[in-house]
Length: 448
Image 1 (cartoon, one colour):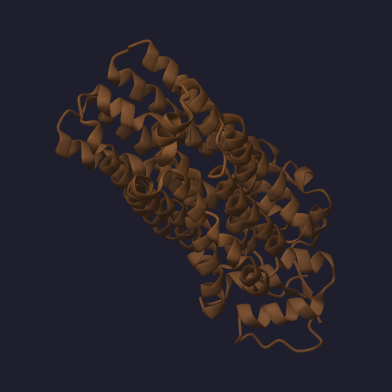
Image 2 (image 1 turned 90 degrees about the horizontal axis):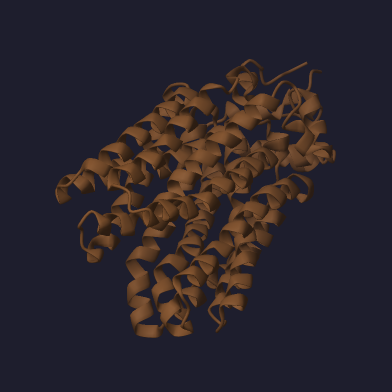
């Protein structure tokens, strides 16, 4: 009897309660993750006043988590392919919950920065893992939509900070928003109990009975008998669990991997340039600082709409071309933003910018998950996210330097827009024929 290709079977499945469970956990985890990353931005003015620190020190404190997210995405994402995804998700939730809460107990910049760095490891580490988890089990026709829906949770977390942070800080002090972030640690036992293990992980360890139970949950109608042997396709992909980093550059994926990294760097450059300087740039253009909260909310709502809309388009058309289009739209929208003077029109432009910058980055995560085989998916997305954080770290510093030069406002936005054009070029250079989705679409459920 021919072995059954579990990856193709998952792709041919129909969305059911099993997929809903994974979607629920992945969205909830990224809502929490987004809150934990954005919480410093809401609390920073109060922290600066309480600790008596200058803007330079405050910038280092806020940026300490970014270094952690870079290292977490690279190393914890890779480790998930070795020890199993549910365990690593639990570790990441523990890190960002406990150490974000611990930051609220600090009273000096150094201890605060250390706590945020450790929290950043979990914040960055969980992103590629939930991408890989949702992508592996999703029906092929819905895969991109489901992955981008998961990442929409990230923007929901940012909106929660914007809506609740001011009230909590005013009534209970800046520490309160950090203490709240510690509550999700209570979810860890439920995550470990209900989150399924990766099929590639089970295949590698020969745990056929667990895999058989999992297959029945993925596709309950499939006629699975006791004699059926479960396997991956191609089998060599599963062997890459032994060397997941090497797998990023094998089988003709090397150049495309570098291009995906470049796309992530430019995408995250745009996102963090706006996260750090949008309020200041709006003030420079004559808008009230009091409207900053509204701009942040509109930006994040745009990101959610862009991610979900992009996910729908990606499932209908080629995700590569959709992503390239979003990068280009982002570049154009950012350029227009620098020349927009009407407040009402500016809200529309900020919405489009959110959809085509942060929304684009969320689609990029789905694209990376779509590109790499399931056995190295956490590693592939993790390295793309980790290396891409270089752009996130450079962005606030570079834009801050440009602001200090007192250049015309339009030029600041054009520099950010240039990153979008570079990102579009990088994605264009990716060899889509090497994508895992392309390979899976050619493989039947029963493979050689």
